[in-house]
Image (cartoon, rainbow, N blue to C red; front, side, top):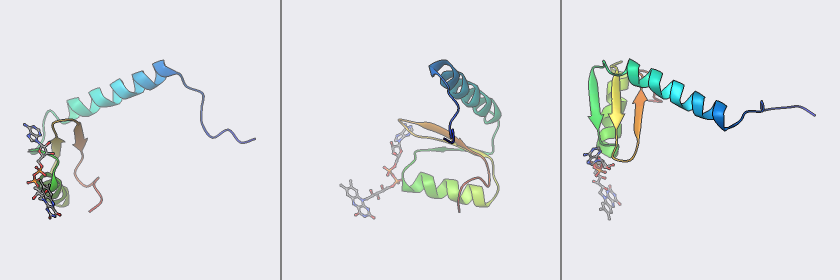
Length: 74
Ligand SMILES: Cc1cc2nc3c(=O)[nH]c(=O)nc-3n(C[C@H](O)[C@H](O)[C@H](O)COP(=O)(O)OP(=O)(O)OC[C@H]3O[C@@H](n4cnc5c(N)ncnc54)[C@H](O)[C@@H]3O)c2cc1C
């Protein structure tokens, strides 16, 4: 039988989430633009910023995400 996934526990998952979030947060402390609000206007602003290869972060009331320039499907 082919094993598709490695065996991991909650600790490994938690460490991975915290490590990745911290790295992204540190990276995007310095960016070209911050988009507040992830509605249609914010998403379009993000798309245009990505197309212009600007480094930006996007924040919504319930979630926070960081998007590198050019990493969004445009
Ligand atoms: C009931 C209803 C039906 C509609 N039906 C249609 C339709 O069929 N077709 C159509 O084209 N339009 C429709 N609209 C209109 C459409 O929803 C809006 O025009 C559109 O969502 C506006 O987009 P926006 O990005 O400007 O604002 P929003 O969509 O309001 O996005 C703003 C975002 O900012 C976030 N936000 C707010 N304050 C903060 C803060 N302090 N910090 C961080 N984030 C924050 C909010 O959580 C939200 O996600 C409808 C609207 C309503 C209310």
